[in-house]
Amino acid sequence: MMTKNELITRLKDLHNEEEMAIPIYTKHLESALFLSHIKPDARREIEEMLLTLAMESEMHAKMFEAAIKKIQESKLDVY
Image 1 (cartoon, rainbow, N blue to C red):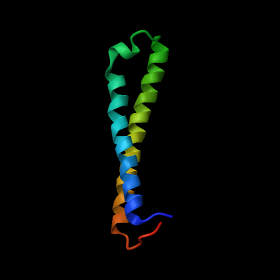
Image 2: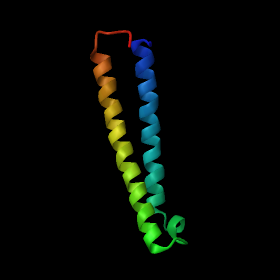
Image 3: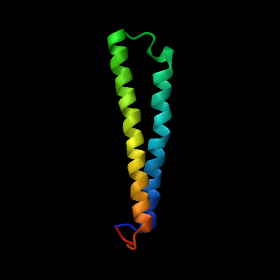
Image 4: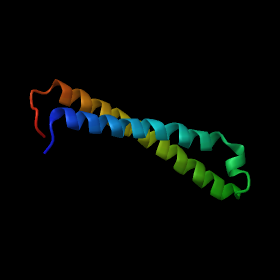
């Protein structure tokens, strides 16, 4: 079990991790050098995976934001 503040702190940490990952994925997507020595078919597959990771991280960040807001508004203090 954890207190409301402990849970919010943990969710904020997880939110920040997702937020930090997004620029890493997009940086690799924009980097011609990163993909320059890879065959075109493999390059497309990698680009799709990085795009999926970036989009899913954005979705996770929004989910963490919603959970944090809900918990902050809650009267419960132990989870």
